[in-house]
Length: 435
Image (cartoon, rainbow, N blue to C red; front, side, top):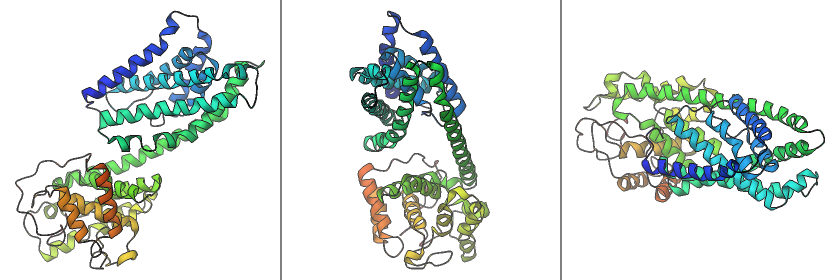
């Protein structure tokens, strides 16, 4: 989103204007400024404590505001924390404005629903379980507004297909937000009790511990991503002809995994597998990777060592899980004629069978030094022709179905290369080593 399209900027501006209209009544009416300020400080401090990469962990404070204050006042609570949040990707200001605007709209909508269902009276009287009903309606509204806005900006700013942009956004966030809503309701009830705001703050103590732990998890995830980026950049620098290949294979592997119905955690591992499948090329002489002419048998044997080199490099990285097996076995073939161990059929790890199809697909649809890129339909036809002998038919079918639904929009494109040679007669690796 560094180079944000004009239509996305217009959309963000429109959402920001909508957020300002929600706040406008505060300029003419009386507001409990001390309560707004206290909740805003709590939210802003919580966002800073959790650190980058983990937005949304302070939603209990925002929802408590929605249960305690008028819609405009509750919406204002979100603004300071969003505008002061840590942002690494550019444009920083635009991202902060977007975050503030979407939170304002979500909190405002939740507060309106809560008030319409008589929530403030139930909270003031500590009337349980009736107080749960307005909160149970407000939280899904809060979640739905965020999901709608987040999906829209993915479509406009990052060109994600609409069906994929909104898929799972609401469902994934509803359960955590339900817990946050319950914590926010507890804060609101204690706030209105004879013990006052000080008692409400006690609810935040265990939440702060949870926020801190969540932040540590996200920092660990960021470290994982940095490790992978460093390895991929090293491969790209060494083998300039296939720059971006790993990321595209990761994208195709992820599409296959999702089509097979794998859970999100496993999908992410297979994305790592695709990205890192060729990391062993760091152990192959550069002159062989960049050679334009035919490889000698000895040179081919050296290049065919790269899966084993790669496995040695990543075997100690525990978070990669089954991705390590994919790095080692992604050149095995279903008929047993692959390398490095000549595994047959189901002996080949499932992750490796996924990456093998994704790898071959991107190799065929990318321009290389020795041939031009093939059209996507031609590449899929070749994969289907080789299903059963070279590739797992189930993985090929999954890729065909995924591309039929979403198309192929690789996030990274290879650099321009010298004038290509005539295309090879079959899949890369059958006439020459796959590089």
